[in-house]
Length: 238
Image: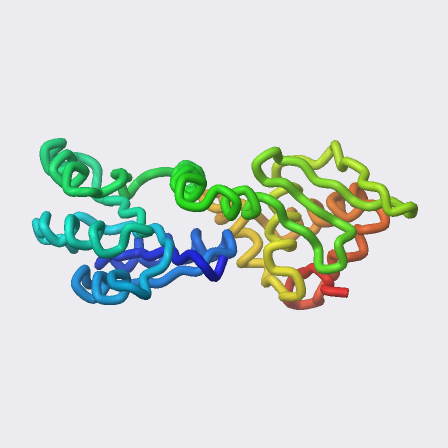
């Protein structure tokens, strides 16, 4: 993913941090910027890379020509306008006509936001977008396909075996561990990443039960998920 950068150009601190966390959790390279001119200075020019930018309508300050110039100088950049609900359609249309690639509202569900970003990613770099959905353990004995919601483990003979009975929560836990193999994840981080809006209702014991079930279903690969007492869990690198 070093070839591609996700930009969040936003003045509202809550959204800036929320989207940074959301995109970073996918393993993507994320850069934050609170000023449109500063963002353009970094994104334009011969050294510009492929990227997707979530640009808040408020930071544009009506500079339609700046969007046209940005798209002309950074053809590999997909610019997505973001705004609160209720923005006048004419304003969105004007920016789309100027070269913006799409428009998202700030309150868009996180899952839908990621799905839309992946759709743009497939257009920018199809092979990379496909690779993003496949996660593998460092030792190669465990793999997961997020687009198909399936996981496999290698048996004793080195053959792939489908893990067919994972619950959606167990699947999300496994994806989280694979994305951050070798790192210790605190319980609070795990709860917020997997349960998101319901995290306030989740007790520590609930996490333990889900991970215990996940280990059991992974069979011989269940031992890859290690417990770090007093902190949380993590996936072994060896």
